[in-house]
Amino acid sequence: MKILKVSPKKINLALKIAAKLIKQNKVLIFPTDTVYGLVGNAASWGAVGKLLKIKKRPKDKSLPVFIKNIKEAKKLAKIGKEQEKFLRKHWPGKVTVVLDRNKKVKIFGVARETIALRIPDYRLLNLLLEKTELPIIGTSANVSGKPDSTKIKQIIKQFKNQKYQPDLIIDVGNLKKSKTSTVVDFTGAKIKILRKGAIKINEKS
Image 1 (spheres, helix red, strand yellow):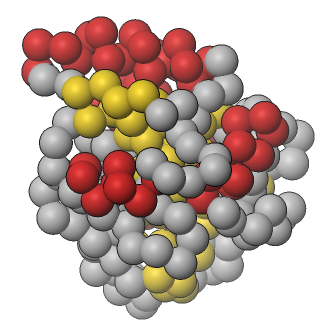
Image 2 (cartoon, helix red, strand yellow):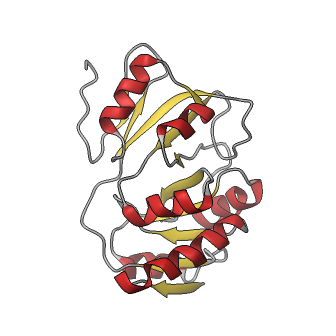
């Protein structure tokens, strides 16, 4: 398990290395606008399968996907006017939205009928999405059942003795304290809160 410490001067190098590994279907621990996350190429079963082993997460439990913009979201999900209005209001940001899936697009680790999407609000991750031009599986960097974290030492400690490990940890130091993203289901006419998180959402809005 390699660790790459990233300072502001090394951002371009870190992005180059991370993008190359994502395209090679490797799994990384990467900073986000909420907590450190496990990330990989959502279009590759090899990457997603490895991520599930690292996280010790059941294959039938779906994962969220990071995307770079709403145009990308429209390729992966069925988005009506009300959904798009909601997305433009809350993205980029700490809100994950469950939408009806476009089954013609090959994406792994997601539900059969739906897909959970998010545009993050974190420069390094947004640049990675631009550089790879891939949808990226993004779930909290923790072994299932253990706590997620914004503290890099806790992240490293949790994974260093595991049988399956990420290929690289991008270490930017401790992140600002944050809850995980709020998860809302927008597959119906109205939104439904599935997980309360960093952003308060009014179901009646």
